[in-house]
Length: 144
Image 1 (tube, one colour):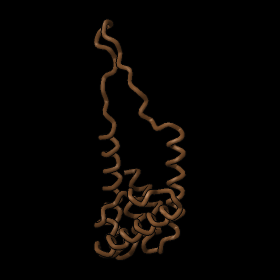
Image 2: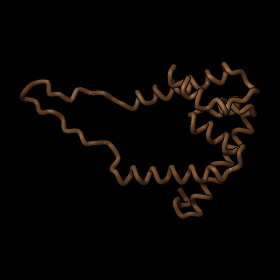
Image 3: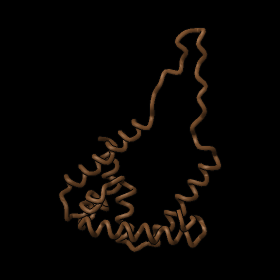
Image 4: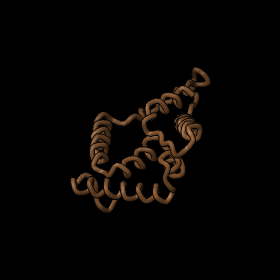
């Protein structure tokens, strides 16, 4: 609930009068709850303590990405944010709503007051534009 209210407050300027406020905040709450559920599913817990003194404890490798990969990922995110600002405002809205709020196309369309077909089209054009921009800079192979 708290995360929903924080997200709603932070994005209050994006609220469109074309849909009900209750629908908009419900979509935010649903996305926040789904995010929590996804995080819980990704963490599997197991008992790593030995059952008896004769049994050795498990040796588990660290699954965290190394610092080089974290920096590379951060640089890619910064580049994509920069390139995102080069898109038209309509495409930016859809891409931000869809990816930034983990929304479905239906939820993004409802939040922006447009049809699902328009949201899908803008999202496709936005992704295509971002991809071409990144490829031109030589940061992504064109066959990936």
